[in-house]
Amino acid sequence: MLGRLNHVAIAVPDIEAAARHYRDVLGARTSPVEDQPEHGVQTVFIELPNTKIELLGVLGDASPIRSFLDKNPSGGIHHVCYEVEDILAARDRLRQQGARVLGDGEPRIGAHGKPVLFLHPKDFQGTLIELEQA
Amino acid sequence: MLGRLNHVAIAVPDIEAAARHYRDVLGARTSPVEDQPEHGVQTVFIELPNTKIELLGVLGDASPIRSFLDKNPSGGIHHVCYEVEDILAARDRLRQQGARVLGDGEPRIGAHGKPVLFLHPKDFQGTLIELEQA
Image (tube, rainbow over all chains, first blue to last red; front, side, top):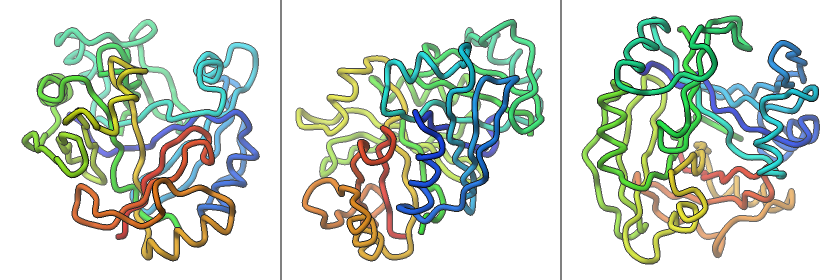
C-alpha cells in the first residue's frame, strides 16, 4: 500500500530563519515562504534528489502545529507523508485494521493540491502519518 | 551539499510488533529484525520506492535511543539521514558555520557500512540529522 515518501515535515518556530539556515549551513535549495491560510501554516520546500523536506511555520491562532511547537519550542520532525494510489481504499483498509483516521475521515486537499488524510500517531508508534493520493 | 534522503529513523518500543504492524496495517515490505550491537540498536528496514524507513529498537543498556524512548514511550520519529558526497568536507563546512557535530567529530561506520556523523539537534531546529557518505 505504501508508495513513495512524499515528504518529511519539520515544524520550526521561525520559518524565514530556518530556510536561511538550511540554505547557508546545509547548502539546501529552498522555495520561497508561502502562506497556506486554509491549513494554518507557512511552508518552505527543500528539494532533495529523491524526495522533499517541508518546513512548517505557524500561521494564525488555530495553526495545527501550534501545540507541537508549544511542546517543542525549538521545533522538530512533525510528520512523514506517504503516497498511496487510492486514498479512499487506503482509508477503508486502515479502518478495517483498527487504525484511526483523524478528523471526519474525508480526505482534504493538502498543500500540494491533492487529497490527504492524517492517521492517529497513537496507532503508529508515536508517528504522525499523512497519506497523499499519488 | 545535501544529497538524497537516505532514510527516516523511527524509534519504537517493540520492534517485532512495529514491523508486524507496518506489514499488516500499512502493507509495507519489511526486512528481518537485525541486531546492531556496535550501535546499541535493533533495526528493521522498510523499503519504499524512493527511500527507506528505519525502525529502531533498543539493544542493551547503553542504547542511544533509550532516553528518547523514556521521553516518548510510544516511540516517534528519531532522526533523518541525508547523503553527502564527502563527509569530511561536509563536517568542516558545518563547523565553519558554527554547527556542532556530535561525539569527537570523527565519522563512524553506520548501520549501512558507510561513514556517518550526527549533528546537534539544537543547531537544526530540534531535528537530529545524520549525514552519511554517499
